[in-house]
Length: 200
Image 1 (cartoon, rainbow, N blue to C red):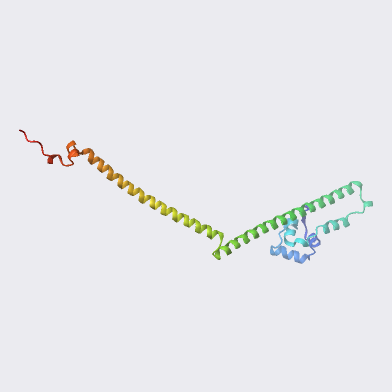
Image 2 (image 1 turned 30 degrees about the vertical axis):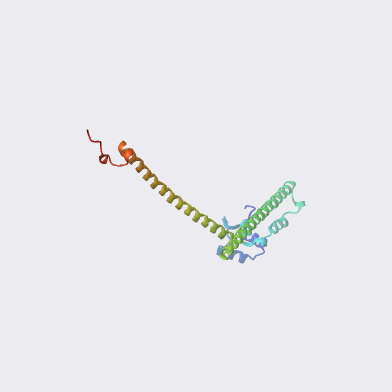
């Protein structure tokens, strides 16, 4: 059996819950378990999830210690083996405890960040709803600048249209001047209308 999985009897010692309560939680699906042969085993992480601070894994270690043979009945090899097993169990419990503490710290930090974001959003909404928020002021200023740019653009378009019309008129005048004959330029009239001197 894995050192991080426990039978119903061991869970009873670890949590202080009655076997009936533990079995009920397993049947209701509140407490997950695995089957190993005909035994129902519950993982240590699952016990921490369901029972939290009620868990005291040292109770199992102490119980196992009381069931061990007395030092006088143990051989040196058995004694060393038991010591190693107990040390491994202690280290495993310490690793699990550190892991759970890290998870709790991480969750607390995440909760704090979420709360801070919520407070900022609430403050921003309150400022905007009162009509005097910095965001509203910035939006008003931006809208004003856009309106001014639109007016300037319209004025530039109108000026460009006037200049285009003037250029067309000047081109027309220049073209007409180019097409006039010498006499038309000299007298300012039509060539047919210029009187010629009579032959003597």
